[in-house]
Image (tube, rainbow, N blue to C red; front, side):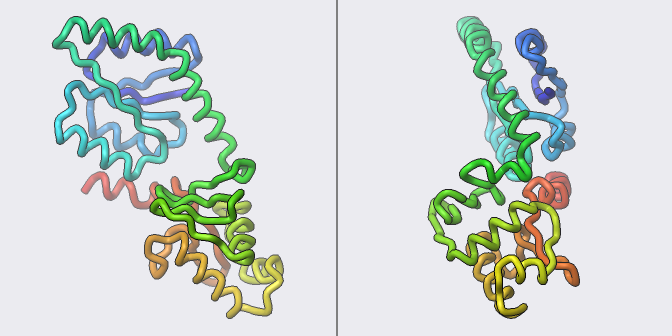
Length: 233
């Protein structure tokens, strides 16, 4: 397993490396912020850890911008070296949290390898940040609001998520949903988009492949097409 660590504190880096290597977790150490942007969309890594001692507004803005486009978790820590007591406390905390941190990364590793199509083995599927398909409750959770799905909307979304990233033809969908025709399918697609998309006129979750059919785009794939450009603007 691999994580990316941004830090200018070599002692903290060495300490984390010694601890995490015992749990078969390797660290890629970076000191250049621009380099981090190359890793935020890479599913090979379990997480990015940002060491920001006494974080400034600029630091927090950088962190928040990364979160918008990251397809892997971003964690924060502070290795402030100006106070001896704080340094000792941080060392003790790092040693104490080594086990839980390692278990977290191991959990992320398992989740990554089983994300699709095994996502439906869980109760929820994240369609995009802030948009969650709650399978158990037959609803979409969006902006802290539960949007109930009709039986046909649920069946349509469930079928598409089972085939995440693959295009299903309109005929396949009509047959699976036992619909009367194309216009009936389009109505259900539109109603579903109104619940899962931020702008259903410009969808990026449930998309149409002209002449082929419909598919759900995994969030990390959408990020890869949009994120790097936005981060470099």
